[in-house]
Image (cartoon, rainbow, N blue to C red):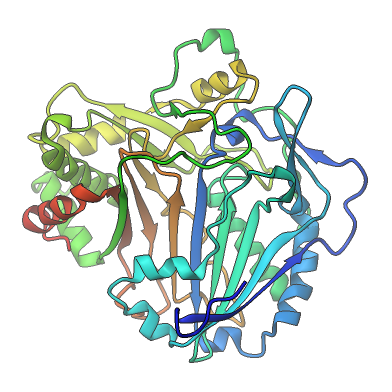
Length: 437
């Protein structure tokens, strides 16, 4: 498997697998929760960019040696899926490992980050594999180390969402950094088979509106081809822009301000509604970390998944009213989702991101706690694969203490995936009404 330097800026690609340093044991299995299985058709793709100082002296051999110890704690991520007699998927912890890709790039990190088509080119920095169609041969996690011409590097992550949410994925990579630094990793548990929330399926017969069923996928865990072509673009909202936006939404209401996430959701929701006109979204899904989560399992899908709905036209609404709805009327649907999967004995094929227009708050994710040689990432990007036609909006943090790298310091990064024919209109609305470009 090779891509020549003439065809792509990425070349000299090498593949290997890395597993735990110690044997997990015979017949060890991990049973995903109902919420885990509800997310099985989604994948997280992350890229961490580092300076040359961060990767100085870090050979692939040293990286793999640290991974052996790190993966002792994450042995479930090294396993492969199987199906029980009932058909419900489970992980056989057979130490097959995570897939490791080494590559080189003919550009510097700065040149790469300054590319106008960064979003499309960034896909070269992480693997885009999915689970299946042969479950027993499909890794759940793939990691790509790409070395830039300047000595800097990127760490690309492909993460099966069935393992855990974005907060869990970020913690997974953060623990790798601690292992690289020689820290003793604390022992953590895996959640026992079951669910994150108590549920009685018969009490939750009403289907959740935050997910939709798709045609059966069998053992190939990928959303089927849609007639709608999706496009992703991202932009940086500086601290100054964000403060102005918050003030404008509230209209000078005695100094009151909605938080950054709710403010951004309100103006983007309204902008998309204006572009869609009669098909404006009246129901949106909100995902965020759960501040009350007491489950200390290493791998979990514990993020809040809730819906917000309105009976008034969102295109003509005040952004303040939409922000208030998001803040005060969120209805948590996790019990309904788990009950729906339980009723179908873990065999459901569902899409959550993009079933409704979906907003994901990743402000609390540990993207910039990762350190290599005392250096934090220059920039971190995350995206979701397997998005439904209604689209998804991710709100990510920016480096706080890393300096002005590509103009990303402070504020928020917003990544929007929408049907291709809506992108230009949404960009125009955000620029014309809110001065966001």
